[in-house]
Image 1: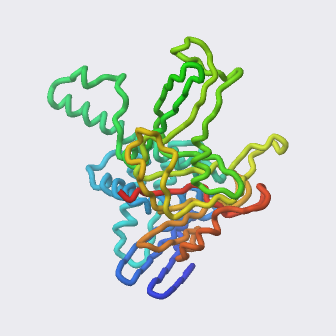
Image 2: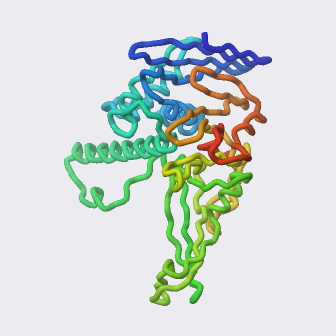
Image 3: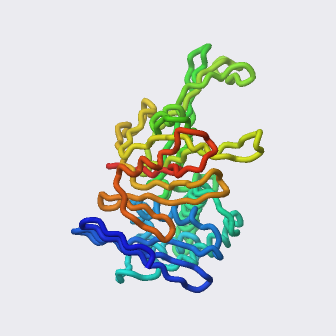
Length: 376
């Protein structure tokens, strides 16, 4: 028995069981007064390598309800050959349909598939949680697009025809539910200071990476992300109207707000004098509720309000060392997942993960990836 945590009407029981290949899986049952919730904590023994970067991201994603529901819906479809998505769907299905109060949910298949498909993760070293999140979301989107393409091809073959118009290889890939959930759009506006002509270019994103500064807030960081930049000297902008290089103002705005806003705080910076990356443990406040103010004039639903639902926290002083934990919201209370320890925490305790007000290189437990879910 790894942990028993009781608080009022809430009970959290955690059991850790060793299975083959020295893989440990911790399964946690959280019981509220009127609700039952089964939660899986993925824990790997040292022989299986440092996998907390994977654990924390999967725990956070499981508590992003739209993502979890889509994964479970995918699991109910006709079976396809094994890939990273099918392994993740099997894992989420095991969690969601666990009937026992305690039990074992081995994620060995998912990790094995991950290491088989990407050599970056095929080792025992600590990896970057943000890189893993990016890889996972893009891989799932690619797999869904490929499956849709294959289904259409099979359908046309079954009908005895191949419509070249519908088989246009130059057409952009169709959007998937990954895009429906996580994809937003940035618009890059450039205004020529000579003729005042404004040109804009849209760019899609699945998460936003923002620079961090000491003693600020995530709102401040987002505003800094959209600060106006002057293009001058050797960086002048080529204006199509003037047909020459001109000084210009450039700024980035959010044009389309995603259903789930994933914010990556750029806490790792390369230091020339040290010849390595070091961690910026700056204190950055992230609120439980968030509204974006750096939207474009033609933004869709610019007043959209977000609630914080999960945080991936980095503990340590550098990107290739340290530890990752996850904080998630469920049934209006917060849970902290730290390997085989699961505990209920107060919302106020989240402030402990804002970062430090002192030197940049010190060890800290600081928010690294924030997941905000839209209320509408």
